[in-house]
Length: 561
Image: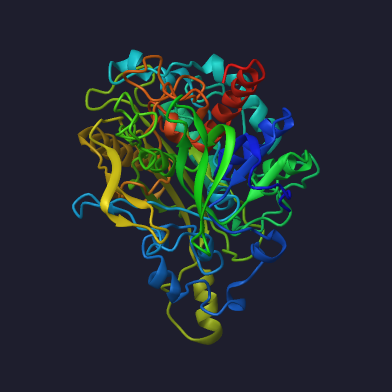
């Protein structure tokens, strides 16, 4: 993608900070509506033809996928399952991009700084929120309802799914609305057995994952060919990532200026009017400070990063952070709770494991069943399971030579489920600027105060137990429960730190992700969420961003912002 050659005095219609899932959609929607847009990306340009390595084999790379430089430069990022020798340079260098947290409350913050951001390595699981999530407070009395309902978002979910392509199966479950699906991927024998027994014995729904991998051609993109390691890119563009889909569409309009290596530090404002005037950024390589002007600013940098920019944009009118007259900015941080589930073996199934393709880039999903129609006496909200069942190698085999190889291939059929549970919105889970730590560009780092509470622990315990009972009902043996809560941030589903609401005194954004305080400033990433649900979040991010862009364009053309 080439940048447009525009001068430093140009005033854009909009600046979008961030080029990931929502930044890509904002760029597409705004440019296609006729606005001239600049996208700022803190990382470098991506060259898919050179950097997508999904067809590489371990022996072709020096450390077989486990470079020691990951631990040396990315000790936090290395905990991410998607970070490996092939792609670790997409992830931030933790020493250049520090953050702090109390030792007794560890937080993992996984970040990519490269064109496309986390859309390059996301898990692609794509689920809709329902009114059970959006109006959860009305259901159980905790927290606040969202100022939108499912009917407000349904058509935007439709639009996003039709464009990016989501494969899946309709199940008719009100707590997990069906979407506009491409054909579903097939289940394995073990998964079908689990599906049938869970339905028969517990009335629970096990479905194939709803996944942003194509199973049929779409918009010139071919279907997934099951090569496997999607976190290393996709040269055929068969899964959604912003550089090869939404950003490419924005570029095609001729109205996009793409500026990479631009580390945003502040939203600039007119102190007389309070309006946003643009974005100040630091050149990643040269460390030069520059400023870009625009009529509208849209933050899509990732929830905590967007709020970090606003906290750092404090001025005499907004001493506690831009758009923070409510004092809510940075509070109510949420991330799904993980670390609970069960696994076992399926001795009735026999198959030789195979390491090569085809490798289905998807698993199964167990739709939430707790606190849907009947209430648990121990906790509120719920959880869904992700998992799968397939034959695995026996890497504990004994022997030498050919005998050893044969023994390794005599593995067992594995089955497992891991829960993603809802995290309650709590005021004391929050982020603030650390006065003593800055990043490599002199921008104050974040201090993150976050932990899970008693409700999440009880929810997780229940999830582990119900996972085990479903596996047992399916005929699994050697069942092992997992009840080790993972650190906050492990799910990579951070939301909530600039929540939307109708009352400017208790929220940062209105229902269209427009800040109450600054009418030409929007935040269109996960910051806006009021509750987390238990579903993967990225599809919701994109649908909400599309809806917000339509409102922005309408208001802009009317001269209201």
